[in-house]
Length: 65
Image (cartoon, rainbow, N blue to C red; front, side, top):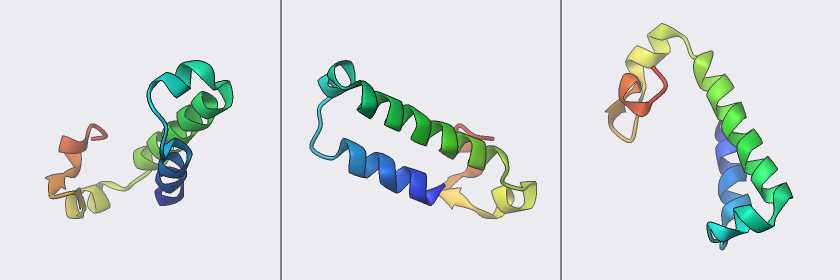
């Protein structure tokens, strides 16, 4: 999950929103990175979700729970 997030940040560094309309490969890479994060988040156990928050938010407040 962390690797996919880091990759998305690397891919989008210095880019503007318009780049997604102009660069099909960038769009595909970012969509795939988000899919990977979502798939990984869906597999996090309930006990881990209860223990882990993101930026101080409970897991359920992060849109994944």
